[in-house]
Image (cartoon, rainbow, N blue to C red; front, side, top):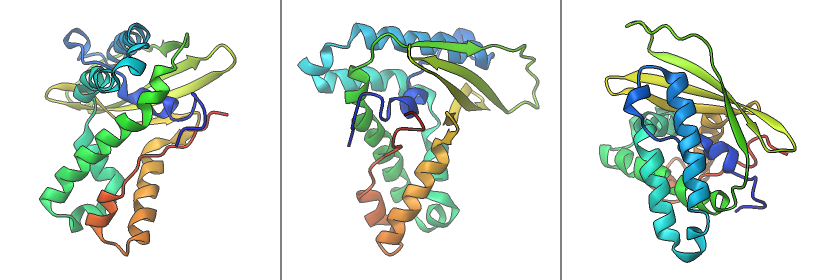
Length: 208
């Protein structure tokens, strides 16, 4: 599934942010502080992948799971047609499968993380009760190239959560949604079969 250490990593960057209660009101601080925390965590646990993959995955999961609105993302990936067609149990099942498939897909790539630098582009943030969504930009410097990252966040009662990401012009939410639709067509619109055969695949996420 992975052709090189760049494949998938860039799409999965949205899944590497840990919830910081001190930054929950400012999405720019929220993204920046926790992106740096994930970089540190990956560097400290890099060798663990070869020794205990399950433990490596668990540590990653502990970091990204609280940060992502998996319910909303999964519903978006399924699309209105299939989301409404699915049973409550099938929706719950897809959320779990979608989340776990991402972790399984990217764990190997994460283990190969080296010395990339992530820089958040800060702008003045004025929070208001009416503000429910915001976009935060970052740049990923690999040493050879600089790639733009655009996070889309949604405000909830618990703070900010990531609902989509666009990397180097590639909209990952749309990519996954198109893949779900194609897989559903392949299985004659059978939601259960589509869910059971789901495999997350964002290609190289626009990174050459």
